[in-house]
Length: 93
Image 1: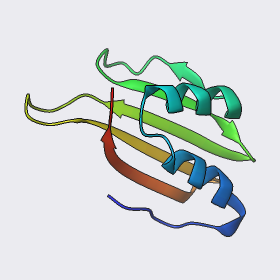
Image 2: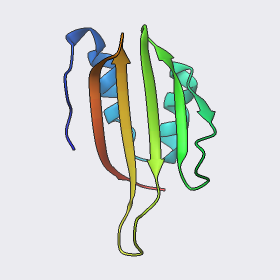
Image 3: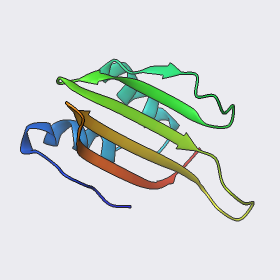
Image 4: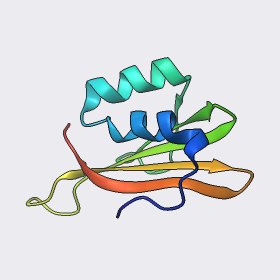
C-alpha cells in the first residue's frame, strides 16, 4: 500500500517514517519522536503510538502470514481524524 493524503507540513515526519527499514531504525525513530510501545491485544503484533508535530502516529509491526512471507510495517499519521500518511511495506526483523 502506498501513501495516502499527505500535507507538506508533515513531510519531515512522513519521510522519517519511510526511513524505518529495520528494528534499529524503529527504536531510534521511537526515541527521537517520543513514541511508546503499547500492548496490542495480539502478542504477535507490535504497536508503537505517540504524538509528533501535533499529529498522532501509529506504527504496527505485523508478523508473516505464512512461512514464505516477510514481516510488514504499517505506518499511520493522523491529524484531527484526517489521515495525513498511511503506508504498509516489508520490514526486516
